[in-house]
Length: 169
View 1 (cartoon, helix red, strand yellow):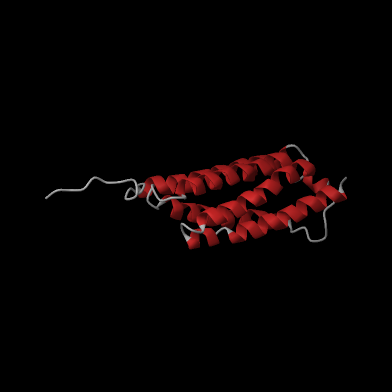
View 2 (cartoon, one colour):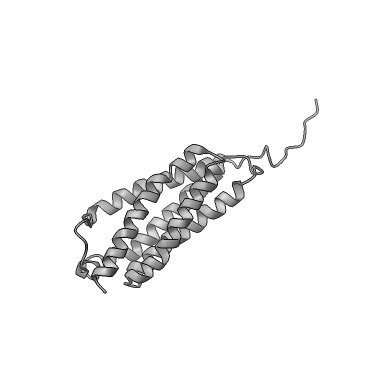
């Protein structure tokens, strides 16, 4: 019996590798974001004037936990696709770029104590989330759809960020 050589279109990453690549970056983003955010809440953030639609502080952790879980599941589905599928590499690149901007927002807004710096990061983040949804869509519709709640939350966060900037300028 002869076996045909495996092509990159047939090759799928091992399950453990896909899980690690899907989970570890979102955990790192969560830990980094929390590390810079949490110390700023009782002092700097508490002293800001906020709009009436500002949610209570306790809501952010469970919302972000759910959103990071959805992101990890979505990217896991893309990671499990055969390596040579057209668009897979670009989708993963855009996804990881948006994740860097996600982390960057915490450092800009909370780390630098700057709502305007937060806006400078969150606006391109919105574009990158839309680009991730678009890049995932032809590869896996469910993976793409898992990013809609994240887009909605970041759109709300953009309005909140802009309002805080406006009220405190």
